[in-house]
Length: 102
Image (tube, rainbow, N blue to C red; front, side, top):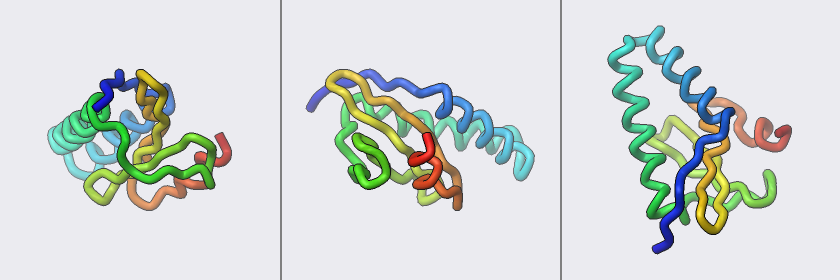
């Protein structure tokens, strides 16, 4: 099992902030914080087991996607020592089109 550092792109960080804001408004800041803590724990797990999800070279070469709790699609790439989280798409967002356009 290969160990990698996990890096969030600026877009992924923005996605997390937007997700927090959305959930905080729809439910509460406490619920938003708890949900994001679960997301962040899951993403940190890529350090030891990043070879997961589905390879999506049809979208863009090198992209992999994996779901989280049936609500978030996480798009990422793998290098020898780094797993880069590119974007986090919540709910019904058109992630395939968004990734093709980047």
